Image (cartoon, rainbow, N blue to C red):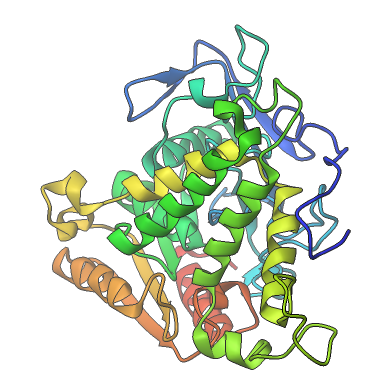
Length: 392
């Protein structure tokens, strides 16, 4: 594919929205998912992956919560892209989240497009995609869905819930909503609410999608088109926020792309331009545009303190969960001050908490990359928690 163009044929892979290449739990109309918007889903389904083995005591389960552009394929080959799992640096045999020791679960979020019910899924009545008829969802809705999955799997409580960015929001919501079901919590590169700046970036992305003529007011699947250009631009803008200026300079600087001099056109003269266009194009192949609208909106609505009288500490009052909060020095999307606010609230609520700020110039995406200090902190926290819970 020409990385300097938004053109390209539509992907020919199976419909992951309804028939995912992963494990699946279906819930009938008698087991609806209640949503914060006042609606309920039923029937509905949730897609997930597992790694490792559940022990006899059912005490070694770790739930991994994915970020905005992630999915359930955390530590396996992605069925659409053929790429390695998005958190294989952290999850696997001998990794900090050791699948020789722990039973790891990762589920696609509600509103996603990789098998959990969302706007790209088939509406049970119309037999067409839900599109914008799908109700708005929240982080708490996704956590509620995950809790129903964990119930279905017969796991009374989780050893740990872990995740970064939007995944970290889910970790915090789990600890607030189900404190007796979460022994340990590992939120990385996240915050207890979405900032005005982050909401603004998301709105730019949503408007890019909706401005694409092929969006068709969300009914593009019915009409056999996709707002590819709009989604690609949304991804390009968001991807900039995942990096730091230092990382951009180190990787690209002002280096030209496959040329010795500027072309004096609007072609991708610079490597950074070519890189962003590639990111946009590759994202279009695996993500549903309407899902992008819904999941970004779920992040925007997240404000944990607002659900507890405006005081974040109330969300964690006398929590039995032990926490390790990790931030990165160059993350300007969820800066360290957001993590410190979580730590202060946990301390005020009487929770057991450790905090690590990792020096890194890799920006927000550092939690997905090779960061030895992060690996050491996560491993040490999990080892100590496992010992306290009696997990060998």
